[in-house]
Image: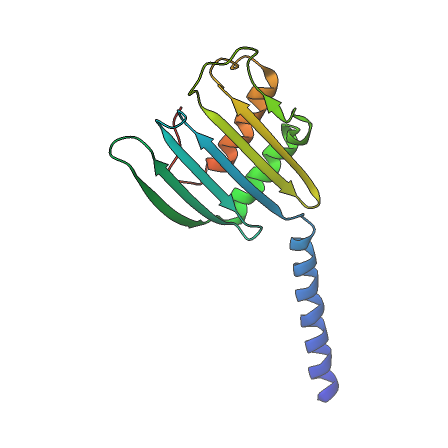
Length: 158
């Protein structure tokens, strides 16, 4: 009887270990997304996401009235996988770290995406995305940005 119990326990542990290792095959994803919509006259958004999918969002309204809003979300595995997929398919780690027009007006939207997948890390700053809307690197950036905000009910506008 002891042998049977031990066999069942070992089988259960092996099954559990396989399940854990399969989930751990994917490297963790950590994201910080920032946007300033109009310099000191607009809104500032800060979104951070942990490897576990916990997202924290803080929005600062700098106009009149001014104030801030804070929210927390638990993103599911599907949302995390969608971000990972967008980072890979859009080759985010190959996007130049700075995307900006040659001549830039003041107080245009400024976006930043800081992404870590496993040990690979990349930070991209984008200034005035409307002026650069036909740039392929900006299109790739925006697809990753949209994947990050897809599961968040509040989204910045610019």
